[in-house]
Length: 252
Length: 350
Image: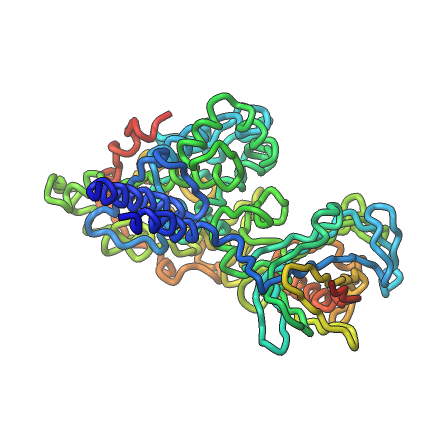
């Protein structure tokens, strides 16, 4: 008789497990934090105030700089470990949106892989929340799809109204798909070590100077605006897919 | 004692089942006893299955539908508080704008395309004349934020809804908590608009054996099947494709239709084939509302087609052969597609 009463709490426990899917911390996991430093030619980006020159001698300022990171995973000796398919919107104007963290198995890792952009499924799945909330001003309302990366500013070389510089880069279908799968190795001699219950950090740099060339020359005088999916967006995305490098790894 | 424990276990199982059921709906976490009344979306007999289940991740409920309806009729969704969705989508006009080529937006501005009728949206792969909208839930973002339509920002709308006395409670009954966010607002709107089904016109009754066509309607139906059904496919009366039907370009608009979305020259001047259901109450016609009568539309297909456009639909290359008598029979038939059980249904009314 008493045995049945002893079993009752277990009965509840078994169901409560179903609802605890969001936190999967176990004894053998730690946290990786990825911190983004947006730069121009290696120097930290100064939103609104910094004056910059691209490889063609054209000058510009930056007023907005945002991009989506998703499907981040780490690879080490034990294979590839994925995060929980979260989407992160890196936004230079918000200090809280310049880093993100996820739980991962303890161990050593030597490369980071992620998608720059929002996968095609999430472009066609209706109203989303969190980083994908249309409130974030990264969703095209007239030609549905996410803006994967956004760079706005001013340039005297721009022939558009108010000398605007406006790159809204998106497109998730066909030959002009701008989704980029990016794999980065850690600096020579560095590995990421995740200890159970502790947080280690990857410091990442994203340099705007890469947007203008290699492989495609993008001159502001010719292209100050890109706001639709297409060949130009693809060219700019091909350039910016090389903007990241891992600057440092801080193990804890 | 033993019986008591068994009953207790049964109760626990039932409670757990309820909680799991609620958790299965992606964004909904209901407290026990607070579940909305879920509704089954019915596909009319003989109709194809929708290309995707629009309610798969937005479980249709009476409370969600009612919240969506309130939002649809709420003028506060516009910047100056004068324009609701229903301004341009009027129920008596099958949720198109009655007697207007272009609808009126903020500050006496005009839209640049004719407001489409809203029904049977669950069967549409994409929305708008150019197909630029890929999911029913995100469609409202377009008119809400368009400077010539409702001209408002999502941020402001959410503030208005959160500070309202009624909305937090309605979001609670529909979604389980009082939280108001863009996703819930858009899902509620989709529950309302996606529920509008038109399947009970005279034509439908004839097919079900509940009514009979007149002699003229019957002749019109035969002509329709031979001449029009290539694009306006039964039972939805559209094949949801994009086609160039040979309209002379309107040089005020220079609207090249779907090419704006795809960037492909082959899509130049193509627009979505609209359903012909309720067509007699949803005039004027075409993407720019240039024709005010069905007679004018048929006249276009008989004599008006511009046959020199490279992307003209091959089905129209030789124009359509329709005699004067057939023209009127066709109109008699098209009139049988009006479904007053939808256009006058109090369930969809304010």
